[in-house]
Length: 252
Image (cartoon, rainbow, N blue to C red; front, side, top):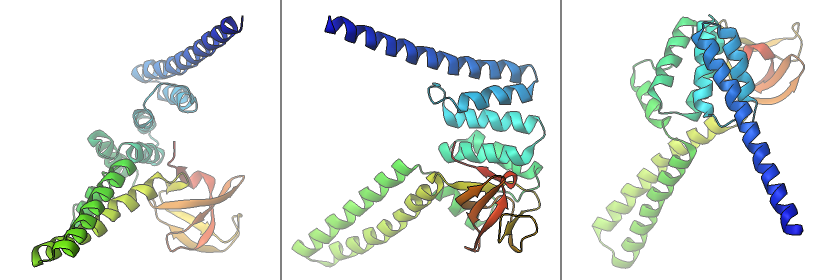
């Protein structure tokens, strides 16, 4: 009797999970149909419902990318920048995401993400790592550094000393993409999507003193929130309040 009850319970749970996944997939497919029909507002509505469904068996990076496309087609390029940035956070090496992000930034009046200079090239190389990849790479280089130190200690010689120094430099450099990946993965990251910049206020009210203006496309950290307002750490490390509609949450 107990075995029968357990089997029925497992069957019910599996059926519930399958039903939930089917519901999430149906919402996604409805969004695809609406997008193809040119109804971008309805497509966005369906895809937002899919995104809010934790049981939906849909790639979240691709879903954010689709939301960015639907939002851009509707003419809201600042919001599209937010969605493409959220997709890039999940899929940092996806070429289509980077291309559409640059397009949305340009159309939305933002500065280009990749300015074509050396700093942008270095930034692009650093930003292509996921947290897992950057962690494994940093551990591998650190392991090689420790191995070279041990060999230099036991065997001596200029060769092992040079190798230990070289791997030590590499280990320090390997920390950079790891730290950047961790920063990108933080759940409290917000993107400024206000074209003219977001006014950082000393208090959560429009008449309060403006501490600084956060430039469009800047990433800040959420600290607290009130209805219509979000407390953030500013670009110059000052803490203040911005209107909720002027920022976009990157964690999706």
